[in-house]
Length: 280
Ligand SMILES: Nc1ncnc2c1ncn2[C@@H]1O[C@H](COP(=O)(O)OP(=O)(O)OP(=O)(O)O)[C@@H](O)[C@H]1O
Image 1: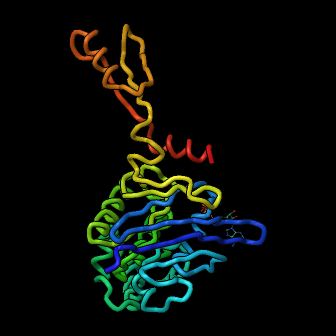
Image 2 (image 1 turned 135 degrees about the horizontal axis):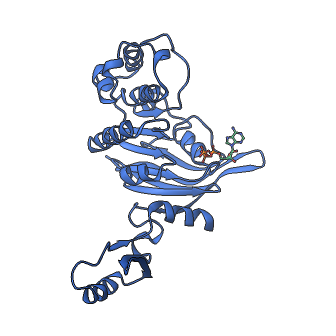
Image 3 (image 1 turned 120 degrees about the vertical axis):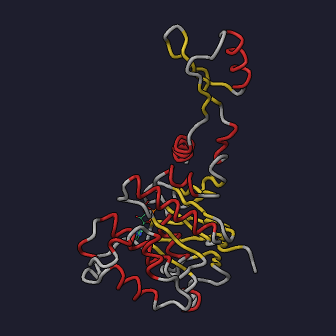
């Protein structure tokens, strides 16, 4: 089997005078969790909607699970899962009724009750949608996206409105799907979420990919200057350095025991991301 799930080259989309996507290249391997980051209006949703087959492109080549989404049919669609933003449809159905109903569209779905359990809604399975909270509705959206056992799952800002504990459980759910071999394209504005889940990240700004890499090394993160910080005579001191080991050695020689409150830090993903966006 081809181990490329998504291949995009020179993708371009204009809305009138606005070039929303301006020559994007991407390659996403099967089994990978791929994070898409970028400010509001960067072109992420437009790109994802083209990959999902919901929007036409103006130029460029696109292959998703080996087919061009602009011309792909039902069999292709059944291999793709999409977690859309919540709608208020189906308010009178229960969670179980809706998940069962959607499962019926797929040739080899997961067991609906298992999926409901997996998104943490077992206790709400018999509850009508209109009686759920915003975060619970979002979990129904996720259940609908995964019940068809997709090979490729698109998650667009999946955890907006989740409380911290539910969000952590959701991360476990996504990591579990990835372990089972599902390819996942994750769009999120939460950098901690992308860092926790993504194997690789593309940062999009102004319709272009401005950086790509794994979360630990994106934008030169791993080789950026480190900050060594410690407490001395009741005052917090810190230095920025390319050689943190040398600084720590010097400190270790100067202090008789532990260096008080010693920390060595590199830029966070958020700092690197903000730097990339400012440059772009
Ligand atoms: N249907 C549309 N008609 C006209 N312009 C559009 C349309 N959809 C998006 N745009 C414009 O295209 C650009 C990219 O929008 P897009 O929704 O792809 O960004 P995004 O990165 O997903 O943003 P967000 O993080 O806010 O979801 C923006 O300038 C937006 O105003």
